Length: 404
Image 1 (cartoon, rainbow, N blue to C red):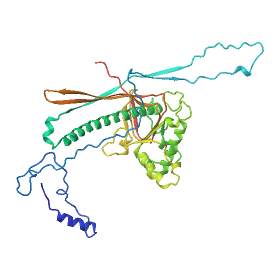
Image 2 (image 1 turned 120 degrees about the vertical axis):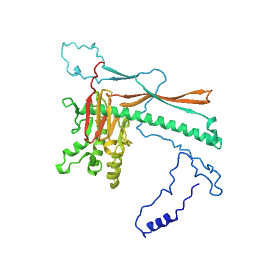
Image 3 (image 1 turned 90 degrees about the vertical axis):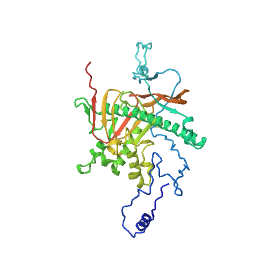
């Protein structure tokens, strides 16, 4: 074992913490061991210089990753594949002639009034698998007992589970991102300019910053980056999000892309907010008020980013989506603070996770295939709202490719 004398460094640190010295550069290269991939020749005893150091403790990195995505897994079924969703349009009212009777008039009651029924079918799945091979005989020489070997194998199982969780989380977020993009396109897409106009606010895609700045003088208007740290804007944004949650409980055609008559009870509203915004509400707004329930956001889940963190967790990156939607348009937009939707608008259905295994007798190992199938769906006839601050965005139709 390599042993370093650090008395000189420690004497200097004492002077720093007692205020007897200014903060100086400290050489920690011989203090902190960052580990090595292989054992070097330094791992000999300090007595006869011939005995190899033994491993005294084995620690397995086996922390369980639970993920952090909104709860949109709905249901599953064993047989069949199609999810059929049937809805009835609201019928029109007609004149009640009971209170307008005329002598000698025949009132025909044999008219057939057919209800207007529509059905949507969801019949697609995505799938992936993670294969991992295991051995027992070949790795026994690396451990001292069965307990260490089992812990080693358990660590590998956990790594696979983490891989599956990460990928399933990513697919769930993509289902939300696609619905977000479809909503932005429907509300803010300018056909003449062939792009999204995020300087304005729609009824489903709500530009909180544009609404806030509309009532402000030029000198008081905020930019997208500074808005989420401004207590006055945060208060306004919290007010608007709560207001729209109540608006969705009344039946309307305004809050879904399909223009269907829909309402969403409070208990069926799902709110997902960007952590940057949710934390800003807690710190810049909730921390200095007495009646917090009057300024709090609706019950919600948080995500640290919609698509990715970028390299620095910059607001421009974490609030951004860049997707090609199911309708064939490419949307790149940042400044998205949150989404609010009906429980039936976005979902993961028929999730099927399973493991198949194969043993190779010749080489004495077995391979597990960890598989996952699920249907990720968006129902554009259900209520879905997007709250954002007006960052730049683009949307363009996919250009047809010439035939080969």
